[in-house]
Length: 451
Image (cartoon, rainbow, N blue to C red):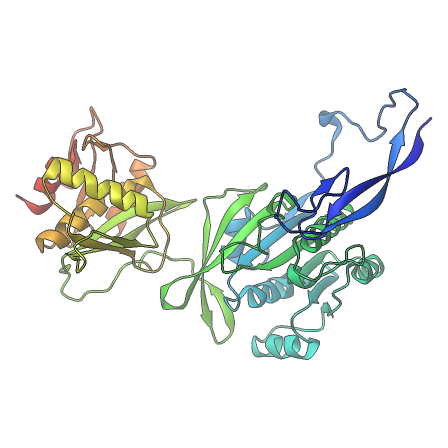
């Protein structure tokens, strides 16, 4: 027979780290004098092992309790997988003012016509402010329940009485539990509130969305302590021209390679389904200035063209520096070193600026070949053909290596009307008049610039 015994642990009020005895400084977060004693109950079974009654065979588990419901936003559903999963917990992070609250209010309004009731918890705005926003966006307000309660215990009572199917927490930094003395937004409060609400939502078969602000350090709610507690983590990013990018970094129900593209208008956020011309500049004469290269990238189920921009200028300090926030600086440095070694192009006294039009952050290794072409184009002040697309990974030996989704990238280039495509060598596949395979960076430069 199981017995309950009480034992003491000391919990850090700053980060939630626990120790069996009191210590002055927390080894996890480094804060001083933050440990408080807490009594917990521990079950013992007098040395007898008791089988947990909640253990089942995996084959006996029913799949009927989980389902996807479209949110009414095609781009939002694309990033989530096939829609909103019931039950599930989703964390949406982004800079303040980027449109997270607007997005979730629109999603909640769309879902309210399919599942009910739905609940919007706001700790940052008054009900009047939210109603004015809904009115400005022409959203129906008769199906959305709202509360501005920020205490976890009272919020649990509200959820128990209403039994909402969809819950939006705006934002998780505003909630607090009476269990801890630390203020709102502390790591311990955020962790406790997120875990408790996630468990309650799953027990009720509900979908819950947590909005989290990005701090100056680029993290959600300070340290990223709650990402492992939720099923899906989405980042809402700002791009050029008023565009918004929704990117998945964790998803138990879908791919983490998908991105959603939105534009902010008078009626709120709207999905941008066709991205073919979003990341390309419009030039009437069709001629490219030096330093511009086109390349296809694959994001999830999409393949589209982007415009890489490179600028190489003499350094005023005599020391070479690299400025790039859309392409990893280490990748730019490596490509520049490959050009120096295998194409005899020196960047030692030059500053390098790299950008991607549209504000898309690109991680695909296939951009190394077009990046090398753009750097050479800017340094030599020679333009690439406006009908040229290129892609491929560069080895340290100057070789052009094959990459994934080769056929999809060739197809995307052709659909945009680009007549010439430089790509990695594909062995027995023969070159055509439009697709030219290159083995190394020297051959790629000669072919692209007709040297």
